[in-house]
Length: 317
Image (cartoon, rainbow, N blue to C red; front, top):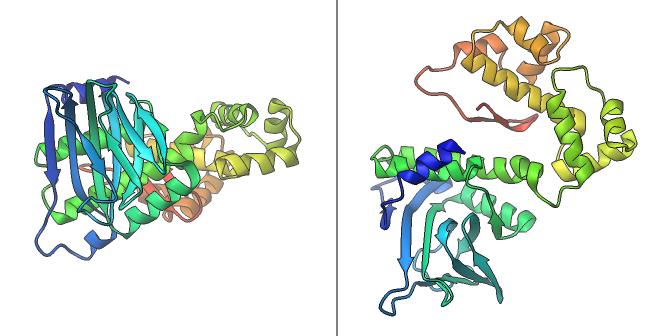
């Protein structure tokens, strides 16, 4: 939360700063994912001025917008339904789209930050989120997705994203954070997740260092093992024990990056009774041994996420 406040303080004095990316002869990577534009705006209702976008008439075709309200109130009309956009509300839309967003008559100001992406992977990500989760969401400011948007904007503003390669890299990172938020983080506070599954997730995280089994988790939430396994997979995307293993691998990757603890100590700390089994599990998930992973970490840059076949997105923070 404190980090979120620090980033917001850096935006407080900014009324309108928009940055467009138009590189000469961009690499083919840019066609997969890149930043089209990023910016902040404060729209005020003064002297009859207004703010209005019709996404079916925008000139930037095949772009993908994430916009987040910081202060005031806006509105978006999607397929004849109107949504109020209060602080903490965001929308994800494609252009062209049957929608309009604007400063409504009931609001005197609307301050927001946005990022517009291009590319095949951005399109796939937006289509997935829209089909599975909708178009308008409330995302607390402290969530990692919003923090990434704020920090990406500050990097652009400070001149730290100034080439097509850097823009593509930043776009990929933001897409990863989108998947992370909606497929994993979202599950821990989304009201659509049932209380018993949320309770199971909490139990797994609290006891990840113990030899937890499916029966113990099921007994804790007062469900049968079979029903828990099925329901947990439906709501979280992974069976309970797979989720436990993923959580342990995330923790171990962080400890390998940020501490000098031995592989043996890390394996015991995370509930693996046999260090050799931990090494096999880590190699299967990440692709290299724990020691190789630690040696290959560049001290000037560390990944926030790894994309794996077994567990999908592995968080390293």
